[in-house]
Image: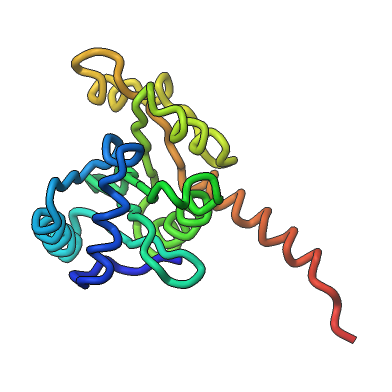
Length: 187
């Protein structure tokens, strides 16, 4: 479902074509106006991950085709900001939730991340609804006033959401227990 970003021609072409769709492009953090610029940004992203500044993965569909990216930007004090985009043909298919679950497992269980923030533009209704569907996401406009104010220095543009490690872990353990209960007993 997820893999480390690569400077792979096929992968980069597919991602660039998906990213430039008018329903996707306005909400992408690392915008590229040409394929060459996309390759350059991908190279910078890979180097930034090697320096520990961010974590970036390519989202794959069930046939391992690249369909988007998921990233943790601005890592500081065991926290960072989530940035995700998925190509238009994959909207509404549940891929966003699956990618986030896998990424959060890596961040919280394999890395030293304690908090993931999501800044979502007020007009990005699709992303707000997707964030609010996740049972471990908390709207943090009031609970994290300093972060909220930093995001909105020039007026109220973003809502702030937070995924704390403990809430994700509790939900993950609850889901794992349900799966265990549903598995048939061996004779």
